[in-house]
Picture 1 (cartoon, helix red, strand yellow):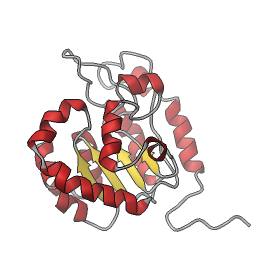
Picture 2 (cartoon, helix red, strand yellow):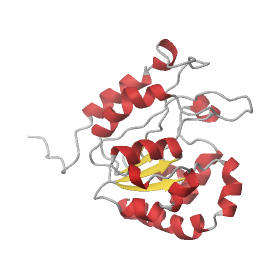
Picture 3 (tube, one colour):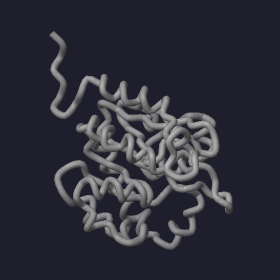
Picture 4 (tube, one colour):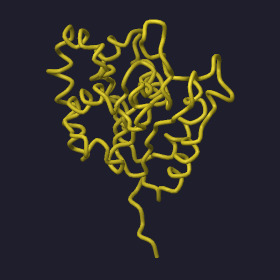
Length: 219
């Protein structure tokens, strides 16, 4: 007789099936909402049947599109520093699920920055993925798109402010709201946000110690 799973855990087959479907997804090219993706899709999403922590970012950048490894760039280095984990721990798929709001690099805008996450991913995949990971009890919601989705689905939309800064300033109320999962709201760790971090020193002195403690408790 197979071992019984702990409450809230599944055997992984549903996650594996979803991951296989996502790896072949071409919705943003074959059935796009608006302009199609300007290059071949390369979905990057790492759901997990065992991880208690979900890293919910925006969308892969150009370097991640090339490597297929989530947060394989300077933003990832900063995020790992915020979290207090090294690369081997970060990339342990038994410990962390990594599901961005857009699975493929969306391309660049006229100024050379990344375009917003494609809307097709959220509509096609996110509710199914979240439903297949009931064991998640901490969500790191990185950026406005991820915060909108996860706070709204958890009935916490009243704690989401009109601006990213105001939402992150409300991080204590968001973290303490409801039962599970807990949500910690973060800015994107892009080096473009260095000025924001300097202007909001409380992020490093007040929020990051709590973030690291929440992660350490689950590892």
